[in-house]
Structures are given as C-alpha cells and as structure tokens.
Image 1 (cartoon, helix red, strand yellow):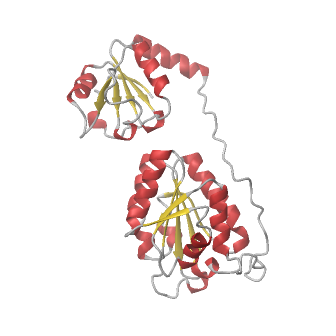
Image 2 (tube, helix red, strand yellow):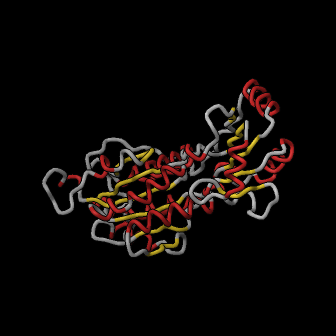
Image 3 (cartoon, helix red, strand yellow):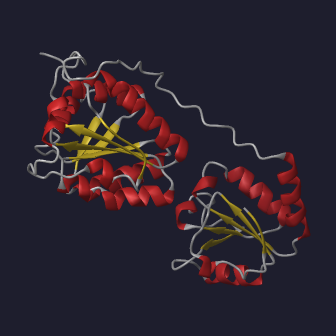
Length: 301
C-alpha cells in the first residue's frame, strides 16, 4: 500500500507525543482520516457528532493534561464550527492544534463547493497559521505549529488541501512547483526558564511585606505549583482565592482557600477581596475586573 502524505502528518504528531485527536470525518478531510486509520496503533481517534465539540474536547484535554490538544474538521462549515472551541483555548491560554481540510489550491477563487479562505478565517484565533503545499514540508509545518502552540500557550492551525492529503508521501516537490525542501527539526520543545529579574523580585517582596491584608488570586498558571502556593500563603498569612481555571491549584476543603471568584464565587472570597489592601495574582490575568479589589489596592502579578 502506497504511503500517503497524511501519514507524514500523523507520524509527526505521534513523534511529538500526541496520543489522542478529536474530529469528525468529511469529504474535505477524508485523506487525513485515512492517515489516522492506518496509524490507529499510535494515535486514538475520538469521533464527535459536531466539529465544535471536537475543538472544546481538545481544549479540555489540554487544560486537564497540560499537553497539546489536537482537533480536526473538514473544509468550509466544518472548519468554521471549530472556532468557538478554539477561542476558548486562545482566551484560556492552552495549546491546541487545529487541522482543517480544504479544496485543492488550484481551485481557490473559482467558487468551488464550500470554498472558504481558511488561513484568513483563522488568522485572529491562531498564533501559527499555515497551509500545506507539498508533502515534503509536512514535518516542518507540524514542528512549527506544535512548538508555537506550546511556547505561546495558544492555538496553531494547519489547513491541509484534500488533493495533497492523498498524494504520495514521497511526491517530488518539483512536480508540484516547490523548488526547495525544508529539513524537519527535532520533535521536542524546551520551555524558557522564565526567571524574573532580581530587582523585580525585590520590589514585589517589598509590596507584599508591606501589606496588612494580602489576598492571593491563583489561576491556571499556578497548576502544578501547589506546595509553593501554600508556602507563600502561609508566609503571608493570606487567603487563597481561585479562578475557575485555577480551581485545582488548591483543594476546595483546604483551610487557606476561600473558594472561587466571580459569578461562581463565594461570599468568603467576596469579603476577602473587599477587605484586602494588597492583591497577589499568581498564574492569572483575571479579566473580570468588577470582581477585583478597588483600584487603590496595591497589586503584584
């Protein structure tokens, strides 16, 4: 059986450690679906009933596992349906890769069935946004898409024309009009250490030490740092308020937490916020400002 270009994409995703994808087959993505079928031993395909669900499931997967979520959809309306879930990933800063099918590039501008310029459509939601032109470039595009999603904690998008999905994996790029081959990089991503400057740490410590009633507000960025969060809260004598996405940072029954904040928040949280003179925000940019303390409250983020 001849190896098809879609298998290059599936194999590269597996190299990156992807073990689950969410999607719905369609005429514009059948080549990729066949690629997943041929490599079902490496990547599990979860069938959904609507493309929007695929995007939300990939986003939920990324939130709960802290790994890359992957979803795919067919051309036109299928791709459009992904957007709602992808904006959830964008606004909650989790890494998701969306793969969409489309008509062959030679048909762009002809009004062919379900023709939508997907690169334009995904330009706002995606940190990385590209179209496959020749099979030989697929590993490179996957590397850039995955690495960008992980580094920027956001959405990457690759649109995959249906004719290229089913092309021979070793198709000569010269025959398709691409005169160069790009080498793939290693399937790995090393996050930057993100160490703040010493003077910034000193200034932050001065603000927190001067506070009489410090409140900690923790979000998804603090997941995995429970012991550190508790140690700081105990040192400062501050209650821990949790955003919805940071709910798992500290158990709800821990004596230091007042619970959630916002529309689903608690009365103890509201009182703690109202009484505070210093706010310490950890791993969150909490946008619902009406639930934050008054503007004159000093803040470290």
